Length: 337
Image (tube, rainbow, N blue to C red):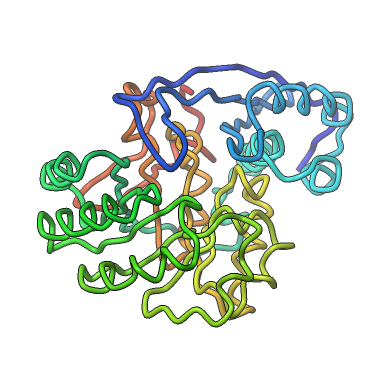
């Protein structure tokens, strides 16, 4: 891959959501993103990043980080050099993914081939229900006819969360069901919620405790696999998850791109952890690299574009509960962004 004499351009977009989306402690109405394009004059590669809201990794910090490394990027530092030049986060994610697509277009090889992964297949994906009143979530679940897997956002309110789980499980007994507390619980409250989750047939409990409180799970008996999200940013976090979590949720904005995400998946497997791919919302351009990672994962949550009022013209496809990403969206074939 040639990275000599590259030019880098940065576009800022505010992707409007089709309706407000609520999780523990936050209400989102749009997703501001940075889109980086790297060009060698003939070929171009793109990457989209949202950042990591709970780490104050936002549009302003991403733009500042990108401008800080502009000289190195345009001088030819390359994807390998980028890993040490920028910390994990949205800025590195956008650049890293742009490098992957640029190499794909320069070589004529698909990204999955460059990554040493077999030819992609459609993936069963979870569809997420924002934290609303239980009856509204039950209605939304019933209306989500495309879904074969649902993930419920919880808020840490034990009584309301319990009812959310009960009514959604009754509304869609045909669906795989996961819950995501987004750090909303402590161990004592979690122990009270657990019987409700078990009775409802919940198959995944994501990030119940705050980041930094991982040790509180030592000795906690749970029949449902527990996934680390906020507790797992990069490979440096993985060894501390063993014995406390069963699954690691890898997101490209957290890891700083597809390069680190692929390495995280390999390391997680070596440590005996299952692997999940998630997203920080975003358009199909952000989901496409995550779809490559998803080929290695046990659980897939790539529904980000379904929350947007308008996705990109070339977009990933949702059919019968699955997600599929044509190469025209990102990678070898050039198409409109």
